Amino acid sequence: MPSQNRRSRRSAKSSLSFTKKTRNIPPSKPGAFPVVGIGASAGGLEALEKLFANIPGDSAMAFVVIQHLDPKHKSIMDSLLKKYTSIGIVEIKDGTKIEPNKIYLSPPNSNIGIIGASLHRIVPPKQHGVNLPIDYFFRSLAQSRGEKAICIVLSGTGTDGTLGLKAVKDAGGMTMAQEEVQAAYPGMPSSAIDTGQVDFILPVEKMASQLIAYVKHPSFQREDTPVAAAGNFQITMEKIFLLIRSKTGHDFSLYKQTTIRRRIERRMALAHTEKVSDYLRFLEKRPREIESLFKELLIGVTRFFRDPGAFDALEKKALPLLLAHKEKDLPLRIWVPGCSTGEEAYSLAILCKEVMEKRKKRFPLQVFASDINAEAIETGRKALYPESISADVSADRLGKFFTREGPSYRIKKQIRDCVVFALQDVAKDPPFSKLDLISCRNLL
Image (cartoon, rainbow, N blue to C red; front, side, top):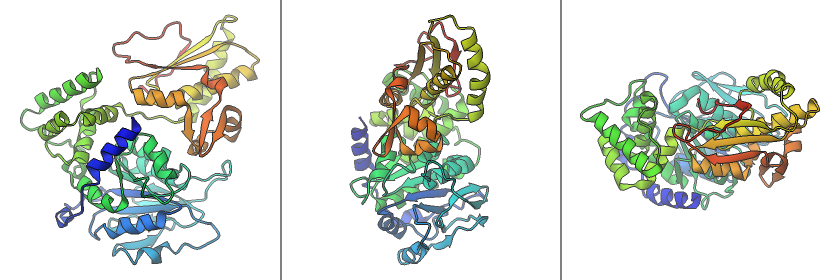
């Protein structure tokens, strides 16, 4: 299935070309301009040169380039890029103000974060011997810019950028990755593409036109007001819901309308359609777009041990209480509705095992993980995650509950056997029964 998606996206998107018409970009409101985070590693220089050679100097976007750099050597990226672009190039210092129509380069031995209109340098933590500067910036970008965040993953080895890209997508931003066949080192773009969260998979010289068309869309230019609901808007929306229900079996008509509209508008921007009625016709002609919209509406925000305070409360309060009152030999049964790709369910299984071991309690453990997204469920069953989870999982837990497989980590069998994944819609399917704990954090 992922390979079909890749081929269809490539054939549909790579035919676009940059034209002079795309240069007429309306001015952004103050502070509302888009910020494009670009992650590059081995083989990234050539990709960056091709990318910026096709971006005009008045694009109304700011570009932040995060690279894997040798901390002992000064980067000469600025002098190399100047040969290919007229856009001003700035090396990031602590507190550098970010402005449109500039390229900002990360210095060696630094993580970069964005708060408001400023970029900040952070000394990288020595975490399991691995630093993930691209993930760090993408996550910061998602938190700071939300729907106006854009990220691009270019050539490089490993999986840095994958989890950060998911964070940008979760925040409603736009995501791109370099086509693997073009990348000198396809590890990073391939890992990002495998998440199913990449909006455009393109050769780098085709990215500029797509970027500019996206930020020109009316939904991107507005601040908080949705695109005008003109004409038979409600009827058109109901037809869109009908198409989704016919294709997937799931009804979104009672979901929060403002969230639904924003997600539909994002798909409209990606499809270059300005009217909801035009997007309806686009959906009718392209069944794959219905699937993409369906996945867009699910908003699968998750990662291992997300919000550590919640897991601390479970470890110190809830789980000891449950275990103290549990009858001997009865299983501890936990349900995670809206489990997405499984990180929450596996985190709970790991924590339960740790608490039982610490308190010398031995109960069978059953974690039921359910979701309406079949692809997310399949990812959870595979239990294979990028090495960048080391930012969220301690070294002790990685060693005890994961095995290293190339640039990835797989959950060990002792934990996998405790977690049962199931395709389920909580709005209409029967719930799991005889439960000790329900974790609704992803669902809510």
